[in-house]
Image (cartoon, rainbow, N blue to C red):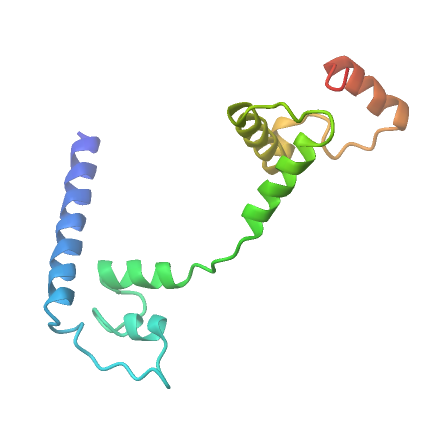
Length: 141
């Protein structure tokens, strides 16, 4: 029953978004406001469409504001390429792309979820205890 209600709500939201897209495509109110590039910003323009209040943006306006809020950068790509270079190194040059991709995915997951996945994360261990941990998991041998 709850899934059916949730599905109807999602469908209604989708229909509202489609109607707003049609109004935007036809240059109808409230999407026909002027835009002065020297003064306005795309985010500011979209925030003034819909209800005109910051809390009650329409579906299309809310989506546009979220898209304009994304800051594009290549840091994550560079991080992945760096990790690939480290894994391939001098010894592992014959890894196939599928194996390399799998290894990078696993290492990225473990790094981003270290606190939950690695039981020894953040513990103050001596060098001997760390060596014992690595020997126990047989990671590097």
